[in-house]
Amino acid sequence: MFGIVDKAFTKEEGPFVAINELKDSSGNSSTGEKTNSFIISGQNVKPRYNMYDVQGENLETFTYTFKEKSIFSLYYGIPDQADDSGSIRVSVNGSEVMTGSGEDQRHYPELFPATCEIPIEAGSELTITIEGNEKIWDVGYRKMQYFWN
Image (cartoon, rainbow, N blue to C red; front, top):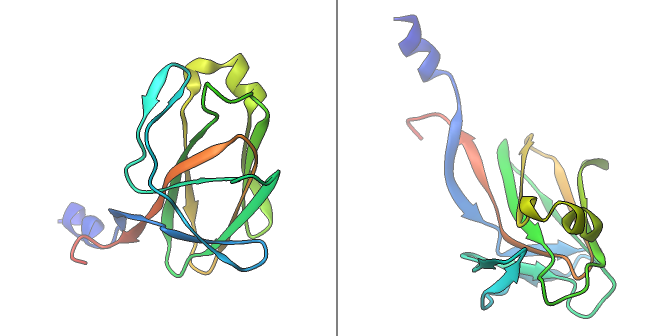
């Protein structure tokens, strides 16, 4: 009986929702592009939903505000054909929660492409900063919801 009640009042991860538009530091929208595959640490990577990078700039900052409690996720890495200069930083409400760099990738290639999953509370602002040759892809979230939603 208690197991049924517990299940009824416990939120679970819902289906993946791709974020196909992020706002940059100036408030402009950036639509994630679909791209051909690329190689990271000898592995063929084919983004399924979207891909973001610096696109000719040295630094790009994207922000997104969550309306509901969610699990945010993305993949990241630097393609093999690019030099390893680059990094990624993710913060929630101004506090850094994840960082990665091309130097990390060079020293620990078996960990790349890497994935990042971050629990986000409703009303939180998530900021992603990409520098250099870093790419992020399949950026999205899963809303926390009750099984009947």
